Structures are given as C-alpha cells and as structure tokens.
Image (spheres, rainbow, N blue to C red):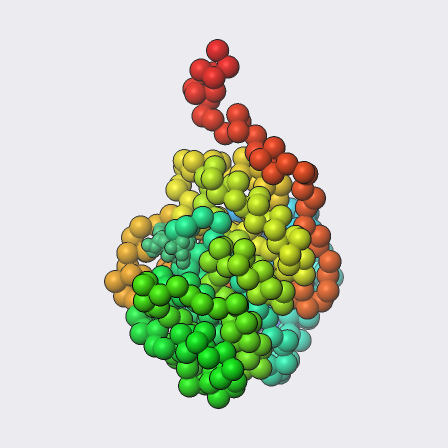
Length: 425
Ligand SMILES: Nc1ncnc2c1ncn2[C@@H]1O[C@H](COP(=O)(O)OP(=O)(O)OP(=O)(O)O)[C@@H](O)[C@H]1O
Ligand SMILES: [Mg+2]
C-alpha cells in the first residue's frame, strides 16, 4: 500500500486486525497468540476503524481487515491505501463471494481475501503467506516489460488530460516507475501547464525533424517533472497547422520503450482518425467520458473503433466529472448503452480542480484523502491490473456490439420520467 512513510515506521508492529463480529474476533485472537503476536492488536470495528487508526499510527507489517460492513469495498480499500504505508501486506475478509470483486481487490494491492466465516486453518495459511511476502526481498528490479497507456476523451473537456497527468504522476511517484508523458494535443495541450512547467521546444523539434529522434534527443528534449517523470509537449502557434504523418509520434513511442518503464499518451480523439497506427502497440487505453447522452454515443463509437483498430489494447472506461446525485445519464443507463461497465468513477469536485490549478499540481496529487483521491487510486489499480492481465496474456474479449451504434442507446429510458410521461401521452 502506498501512503508516504511516517516517522517511526521502522518500529512497525507485526500485526493488526480490525474485525466486525465476535466469531472472527475470537479466531483471530487465538491464531495471533499462536503466531506470537499480541492478541490485543485484534480490534473490533472493521474497515472504518482500520482507516481511522492507521491515519494516526504507523502501519503494521501485516494488516487484517474485515470488509463485511463496507458498502463500497473497492473504494474503501483505496481509502485504506491512502493511509497505509508501503510494504504492509493486507488480508481482507468479507461475506461477498464474487470472483470479480476478488480480482479487483487483488488488483488494488491486497494479498488475499478470505470468505467469512473462515476457519483457523485457513487464517493460519493466509497469515503465513503474508509473512513470507513481507519477508521476501523487495525491489526485484524493473524487469517489468514496458507498458504504453493511451488516454482518450470521448468528448472535449471530459478531463482526459487531467487523468493522463494524474496517471503519470501516480505511476512515477506512487509506484516509482520511470514514466514518460506525451501530450499529443500539440496546439492546445495542458499537460505541462497542469504541472506548472514550460513545455519547451522538444515536441515541436521532433515533429519538424523526425530523423533526429533517438535516445539522446529524448534525454535532452524532455522536460523533467521529477526524477521519475518526464514530459514531452508543445504549445505550437495556432497560426501553424501541424504537419506530420504521425511518424514522429510513433518513433517517440518507440524510443520511450527503451528509456522508460511506462509511457502515458494524452491522445486527442481526432488523432485516432488521423493516425490510427499510433494505437498499434498500446497496451491499455483509458477511455475517459462524462455521463451524458453525447458522451454515451461517442463512447460506443470509440469502443467499437478500438475493437477493430487496436484489438490488443485493454480498455478501462473512466467516468469523470460525475455530479453526485444527478448526472445527465445514470451510471446504470450509461453502462447499459455502452454494453459494459464503467470501471472507475471520479466525482466532480470543483474545489479540488481549482486547488490543483492554483498549485500547479495534478488532480491526483491534490486530491489526497478525498473521494477524488480514492477514485484516482482505483484508477491506478485498474490500469495496472489491465497492464498485468495484458502481460499474462489473459484474454478478456471486449463485449460484442451490434450493427447499429445508435440503436444501442435506449434514448427513451434516459428521458427523466416526467418528460417520458409527456412523450408517451
Ligand atoms: N473530477 C473533476 N472534477 C471537477 N473538475 C474536473 C475534474 N476533472 C477535470 N476537471 C476540470 O475539467 C476541465 C477540463 O479538464 P481537461 O483539460 O483535463 O479535459 P480534456 O478532456 O483534456 O479537455 P480537452 O478536450 O480540451 O483536451 C479542467 O478545468 C479540469 O480542472
Ligand atoms: Mg486535453
């Protein structure tokens, strides 16, 4: 888990547990005593208590947390990640027997999930495995294959650039993966601006002289946001059209593969039309959308386009700027229209967005400890889950689409009920 180190973290307790019922409480106290751990470190109170307690104390080596009272397990695990220090091995327990949830929780960084009621043997085994994981040497080295992640907005202004910069920041800062951020909105890009940096001439030079692109060029032309994050972007004069066949962009992505662990590409949707080949080696595509009718239509079209033109790429659908209570289209109707689920939902939060703009920091960095922060952590986990599934070659076909895209939208069901009554009259 990810929160920054707190003073005294070296003096971690070996074990803390937060459980909801008497039976689990007794089983945990018994097994903890057997393992030589203090039984009083088994607390009542489940997930909420765990988050509260860990926000003020050093995290243990192994944390057991009961999620049975949690209304939104994934969101809660992400809140836990915000307060839990790196290295803590987390075992969760709950009453929901759902393989999808299990996979999502594992992708969020937990070590194991025990279905309640669990027996002492099952618990012993999980704790022994957690101990082995905690003791195993860390930093096995950056042997991971490179991953390229494209971020595409279904409509203008949905927050695709906010997501791209946030993802770049989280990969580099939270996961310590050397990351390149490529802003292909050459005239109006905001990636450098969002981090309070000058874009420089790097990307413009690359477009004008693609033959110069090599490792050395990358090193010199990219703007460093931190030790682990570099940006290539431009603010090209709006009096000049961009003259590129896309070859320069493709070559940049090739060079990034050698120089970084991750590439995040902020890819304006018109680029898909102009330069479809840019998507040919993309491992994961984040399709960022709002919950509106127009965005539903374009999400369907873009998902279909990806299925045909970038079938190798895993897709994560991110609904951003979602107004609490009353989006134009409900999540359920939106999911029905696009025939797949929304993987991550990021609420609309004007306070955090304006704070990010004032501080010159990404949305994810500014949003720590808030609902947007938890959603950003979920976004990171989903994205890395998709990257890992891609590495493992675990086939997850995109849902089938029918012939007519517009036919997929049940327009009538989206009209609020009062208007619907009027339409039917
Ligand atoms: N979750 C959010 N809550 C509130 N405001 C947000 C949120 N996400 C992004 N914003 C704001 O929405 C605006 C548009 O965001 P951004 O520039 O990232 O969108 P975009 O999809 O890249 O736009 P464009 O189509 O111009 O490239 C910005 O002012 C940003 O701060
Ligand atoms: Mg943008």
